[in-house]
Length: 310
Image (cartoon, rainbow, N blue to C red):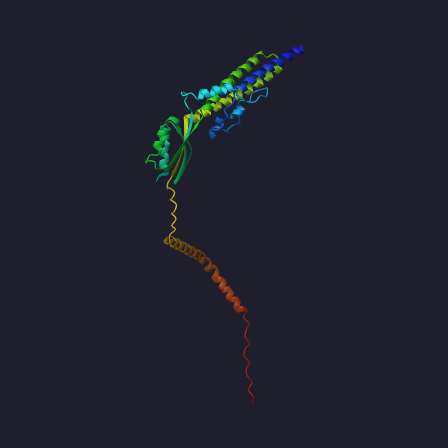
C-alpha cells in the first residue's frame, strides 16, 4: 500500500516537473529588448524583471526560450503590418517674462489634450514641469507649448524608444503562464494525498504571483506607450553669452585697467568696512596707551638751591 502511494506521488511530481520545464522553455525574455527598456520600466520591482517573472521550473532548468518560439516572435514583430509601439519623450526650454502665467497656460494646454501634470516646481524666476500627453497628440502639444504666447523657445529635444518586442514577449509569457497554471490546477484536482495537495497548492500560488507580475508589467508598458512624457523648463532670463576674447593691445590694456579698477574698488571697500571698527576700538586704545606712557615716565628731581659763598 505504501509503495503504491509513493509511486502515485512520484508520478505527480514527474508530471509537475514536466509542466514546469515546458513552461520555462516557452517564457524567455528578449535580452536586447530588456536592456533597451526605459528607466521607468526597469528596476522598480525585482518581481517585474523577466528573470524573476518566469523562473517557475521545479526541475531547476534554466530560463531559456525555444529557438522556434524566438524565431516566431521575431517574424511576428518584423512583419510590415505590425504597429510599432514607441515610448516617446520630449524636453522644451522656454524663456518668458512671466514664469507663473506661462506655467498655468502650459498646464491648460496639456489638460485640453487629455493629459495631466505630474511633478511641478514653479517659482517667480524658473519652473520645471513634468507633463503627460497622449502619444497621438504629442506633436500638436509641442507646437502649442513652443508658441510665442508662452515664451521664446531656447531648445527642444525628442526621443523615441521602440518597445514592440518587449510587448510581444510579455504577451507570449502571459499566455504560456496561464496555460501552465491551468495544468497545475488540473493536477491539483486529481491529487489525493495531503502532501500532494500541499505541494501543488504552493506551486499554484507561486505561478499565480508570476502571472500577476507579468500583467502589471504589461500595464506599465501599455501606459508608457499611450502617454508621452514632456519636460518643460521655464526661465525668466536667458543665460548671457560668453565674453569674446580680445587678443589685441587695446584689449590687453582694457583688461589691465579693469583689473586695476576692480582691485582699487576692493581695497576701498575693505578700508570702508574696517574704518568703523578702527574708530570705535582704536581711539580708546590710544588713550589708554598714552595714559600708561605718562604714568611710566620717571619724575624729575627738583633743582637744589645754590649755596652762596660769604
